[in-house]
Length: 478
Image 1 (tube, rainbow, N blue to C red):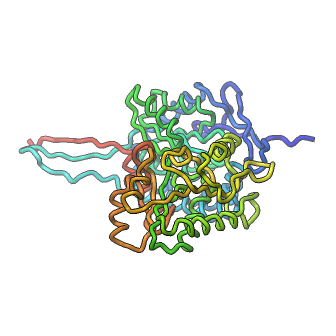
Image 2 (image 1 turned 30 degrees about the vertical axis):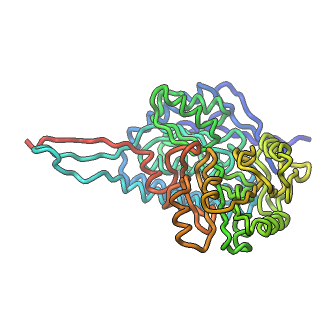
Image 3 (image 1 turned 90 degrees about the vertical axis):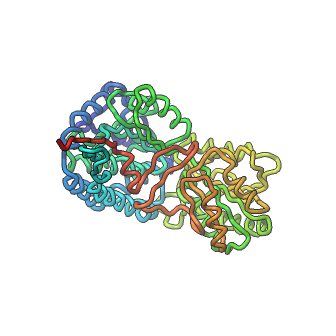
């Protein structure tokens, strides 16, 4: 006896559709390693249809008032709250995340972020009008850019979708959104919810693989392409978008330094850093996974961190005692395992370092010490529950090590010395610097990196402005 797989479908122009040529992808629950659904493997015809729908819907949505768009977004937020249990269930199947943590750490921020952008919809501000040349008045209009092609990642499928569609819709744009091929379920459910609220064509979901995303970015219709993903994917998007000078918004990888000075409360720092390093199985571009510790407390810190890792539990989504779930897919498990397998001889695995169980893609909370700045695991993003530890001698060396990677998304400094914290926050070349904490985000503050971590901001008024364009209008007073 076989169980019939759930059939996910694209959402285009207000209706659910299979891929035009009928192709599908198997969707695997990472907590079990078993196929539980099929998803469309969308091709050019599907992308064309979605772009046509979004383009047709754009003029009316653009011309709606900010107050009207605000009401729509507030209705979406309310509907997400009402359907929270369904969204959680879909996300848990997508990712294998713990049910309790998904309910507490994702639904409330998502709803809050949508409501924030609902308010931002009514703050489409330009500079004040003025006469900068005799007899002429200048004004600045802030307008939506048009159709937005958006590609979301698999580590936070629901929340990253919100970060993309909420500011875009608030600003008056229309959207074609593609979820990751491994995590389409919650995005398709979002389409069902949103589709009952927005006019047809305003919000569209196209499922598929990298080729589907490539077709979206290369399509002539979108005025903007936004992606959260790997550095390689971001570079490919930027290259494709350059061919017709699309605007590009990139949130890419991270390798966050966590700089711990000798005056830090070790017990408190270890508790917070281990939580921020292992949360979501370390599958977070801002995860606290590259720790730099002053040499005078290095051994004590490593010992405490290894104990914290040993006490951290991973397991099935319905286990309320687990801190995180599985890695998202078999390739990611292979990648994380590969980093540990290739460790140099001078490295020491203080905790973990192995797969957990033979069902699903679980990996033990891992701590590695004895590393050098040019080691692969220091320079490249692991994206797993692996925390590395290096020692430093002074503030200058801490900064050298911290800034000595190609990523520049997030960082943190741990010290009781206010002046030192201010010096470090100025000198750290990262889009975010936390002081004596790591990983909290709020809707009102910008999130985005420098260097190979990309450009553009998510969240905040800055993220909202990224989905607008500026027009100068000058009129003669004569």
